Length: 161
Image (cartoon, rainbow, N blue to C red):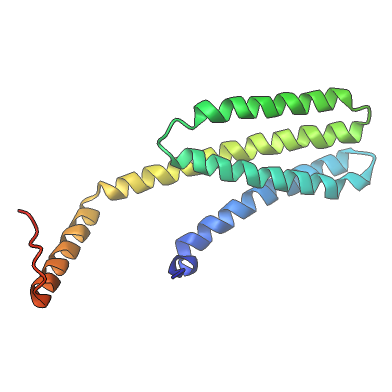
């Protein structure tokens, strides 16, 4: 039932979706940790960047793969989120809270952009495959095999010509 889970392409896509946000979070958290005087912010920063990075890349891939007008709903939601985060940044007195909030917004936007690129690339590849002669030949072979099976089982249901 879940044969697609073992395919190479599925595992590659899953790994790509997990590694990109984690790698970005690791690099940014390490840079902020080296520059900061307070070394206790590494793990909270990693947690925030990884979680918003996963959300960003998944939403980006879904938005990039669809042909619907998703951006008309996505952009106002993201601008509202960024505005709320900026309000939190200016309301907080501690530099650590400001750092975590700003890093979260940066992580979300970066991973959303990467996800949009990956999703639009996947959609373009899929559309090229659907329009290829290899795919159309495969459909013709499958239809011919189905027609022979119908004739062998004497089911009728002749294909319209």
